[in-house]
Amino acid sequence: MNDEFSHLFPSSRAVAALSAEERIHRIRADRWINYPRAEQALAKLEVLLSFPQRARMPNLLIVGASGMGKTMIVEKFARDHASHFDKISGRMHMPVVVVQMVPGPDEKRFYKRLLATIGAPEPPRATLSVVESLTLRLLSEIRPGMLIIDEVHSLQAGTVREQARFLNMLRFLGNELRIPLVCVGTQQARNALRTDDQLVRRFEAFALPPWQNDQDFAGLVGSLLRTLPLRQPSEITDTTLKRLIEVTGGITASLFSLMGMLAIAAIESGEERITLGAGGDKRNMLALLGETV
Image (cartoon, rainbow, N blue to C red; front, side, top):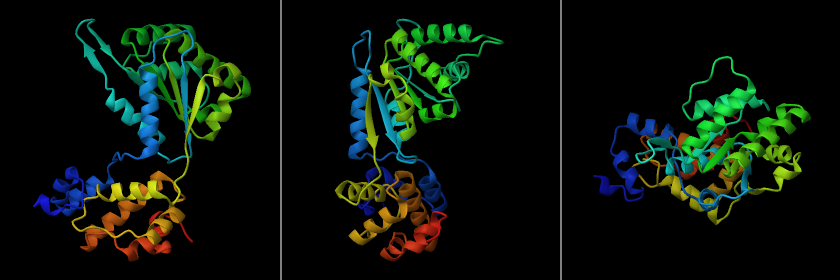
């Protein structure tokens, strides 16, 4: 039966044979879809991870509007470089450490979050210097090849002085561990890094701009459709693609959310495909996203 669903990727064909409830559950889950800009970001991360140690390591800033898929990219990279136990050293090796920025430039809270990320217990009543020393020692033991800090734009919640101290801490971490730092955030993240001239010079900026109605966008929508377990092929025309850009603003998360809701509606109605009518009505599409015309 799975061979009948040739309009889907092979991994989605088996899902299309499941019940409506199971398929809807799968649609609501996160999914990874390759597209050129994401592949470029992953390639840059690969280069950094394999970079030889030196006194001043190169860094990367992945910047884009909220919902453009920045976090999904770094999570995909971390999955591709999962932690493993080194039998020779008898220690856990964590090639990529991904930590979310605390809500404000607080060094002690950041170190504590780093400890939690690597699975280390938080020392009771520890001073900043104690937490810092412990974090550096444990990070040296697990030998990460990269530290990724997500939501870096949260830096701007602090004063200029607090931001400067926190950025100085990041520079110190990179120098001590001799690993690349990857910061991820919105445009505000770039503005925050610019307050530290020494640090910002080490960061290459990589932007994830909103989608335009071009060949790459058509490819993304086509790939997305091949992951949605609908039993009939959907019809997406040039007019529909243009409407999708208008409604979602070219934001990846909005596109994925909208297409998922249209797919669920197609399953529930028995249509089993996203039709031109459902995809071309701007009012209906905005209503699905909780917006109005």
